[in-house]
Structures are given as structure tokens and as C-alpha cells.
Amino acid sequence: MERLVGTVSRGIRAPIIRQGDDLSEIAVNAVLAAAKAHNFELRDKDVIALTESIVARAQGNYATIENIAKDVKNKMGSDEFAVIFPILSRNRFSILLKGFAKAAKKIYLMLSYPSDEVGNALLTYDDLDEKGINPYSDVLSLEKYRELFGYKVHEFTGVDYISYYKELVENEGAKCEIIFSNNPRAILNYTKHVLTCDIHTRARTKRILKANGAEVVLGMDDILTSSVDGSGYNQKYGLLGSNKSTEDKVKLFPRDSQPLVEKIQASILEKTGKHVEVMVYGDGAFKDPQGKIWELADPVVSPFFTKGLVGTPNELKLKYLADNDYKNLNGEELKEAIKNSIKTKDSNLVGNMASQGTTPRQLTDLIGSLCDLTSGSGDKGTPIILIQGYFDNYTN
Image: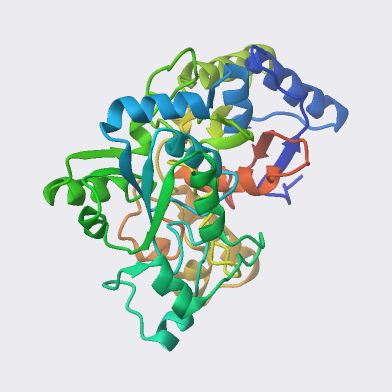
């Protein structure tokens, strides 16, 4: 019988994960139990994905604001420094800011505007146009900002992040001076010691600061790259990808998990004879057209994955073939002609007109985004995702 279903993404329920749990055994058992309970079978090239949160939790990869403060103090070389380009997030940044403030007597907090790096908005471009403000050149003090724009709250959270961040710093006993600019050079008029908190543009920001006279430049990827007083750490990403755990603790991005994905792959092969791919995923890489928020606040979508997930899709556009190469065919003749094109397609379709409009992104970004949308970030209770049929095409 011809298969009439293509890609299927299933959220797999699992126990609440605690530090020290055998995540490989839990993931394998959860997927196999779901397959048995819901009467489906695993197939070669299925993808099993684990949210980064449960991987980090099983590792116990946590750090407190005291751990963060100690590392910043040791590396910054001054108790007056700048914190620039943070994202506007209670979950992603508030606890980190507490730790930074705990290491300081004064923080110069420079916010990008009208929005942060991932799209959380302080203002709109219409607001800037109305007041004649150029976000590419104008540097605003807090007083000037309030004079021009007053008090605005985030569309979805209802939080005035300017007041919120200022209070967080001051509650830790440090002074806080807020500046608004999108030019990293602007902060050097206030201090030569800078902690830049952007995610995807961090390398450029560091380069610009160092080239223009900054004495100490750190990124969040430079903090907690090793354990501080027994804390968790991430040698590659530091604080990037961390999330709020409690009011004084963060969960860090998982580390050293390539053996985990390979162990799950091997275990599934042993138990079922099927060769699946396995990955750890965090935020998806997509943009919300309503809130203008780019979801990807993690440094990467997938930090660990098996070899079969390397690369980008190599697909033909069916509607292109139907409307161009085979525009005079219909019915079964058209179907067979398209199937034959797929079966005989080149291994690399870059530059081929018949592939235009297919998604030119890394497989792990595409699949990780599907996983993130499937699992959500709330109370679904499905931190493991099983994707079937992703690598199928019209001929399967």
C-alpha cells in the first residue's frame, strides 16, 4: 500500500529529570514505550531529539549568582564596568544581571534600541521616526529616553525592562547608569572594562571594542567556562544559553554530550535494529511575525548531534518541476516523471534552478526548530521528540 503520510513529529512523555539520572536509558525506554503504546514502529533515519534542558539537568549543570559574581570579579579587573547589549528577558538574563551586579560597585548598562538582539522591543521604529531619533548614531541617556518616550511595557510580559533591570542592579548594592546605543564604541566614553552580552554578534562586538581602546573585553561565553567553587560550567559557551532555575541560580547550556547522543543511537540499534539519528536541541531558529521576536536566544539550535544530521537539505522543488520541466504532463505520467527526477537528482543541487525555494539551512536548525515547536516551553511534558519521515521524499 502506498504511504500517504510524510513527516510526523511526536512529543514523547518522560519522567521529570533530576541530576544524576541515566538520560540515555530514560530516553530509549520512553521512545520504545510510546511506540508500543501507540502502535507505531521505529524506522531507519528517524530522529530522536532531547531538549537541552533535560540534558543540563541530568548533568547538574547549574550555577549561582555568587559563582557568576566571583568569576566576573576575577576576570574583569575593575568593580566599575559596562554590561552592554543584553536581551530583555526575565528567564534568560535577570539572574545573570544579579550576578554581574554582585561583582560591581557601579554598572554602566547599555541597551540596544528599539529592540534587543532577538527582537524584544523597547520601542517601535515608528516611535523613533516620530521623535526624529536615528538608532544608528544617537546615544541617549536614561533621562533623555524618558523625556522622549516615557514608560512603555513589553507587549507580552507587561514588564518595563528598563526599570526592572535598574532595580535588579541596585538591589545588589551597585549603582546603575543606563545608556541607549547600538554602537559598541559608545560605551568606551564611560568605561574601558566591558562585558558584552550579545549572542550571535558577540565576535564582532568584541573585535570593535578591542580595536577602539577597551582594556578588558569579556563576553558571556567567557564567564563560567570552568567550574567556580564546584559550580556547573560550559567550556565553549559559558553563560550563553543559560536559563533561570531559581531566584539565585541558573541552569547552564549542556556540555560534553556527544557521547550521550551516540549512546542513544547505539542502544536503539541494539534493541530494534534501526539506525536512528539523535540530537540535543534548544531554541528553534524562527521569527514571530507578530511580536517580531527571533526565538533563538541560545548560541546554537543543536550543540550535539549524530553524524547523519550534518549538512543541509538536497531537495527539488516539486512545483517548479510541475510548472516548468513537466508542464505538459498530467496524472500518472506527471507523477512518474517527477519521481524519476528525484531518484536521479544530483548529490549537490546548489545552483540548480529546480531546487530554488527549498530551505537553505542546516538540517539541525530545521529539525531543531520543528522539535522546539512540538515540545513547546511550558507544561506539555514532552521533552523528547520523535520525528519520522523527515528524510523521505515523494518516491518513498
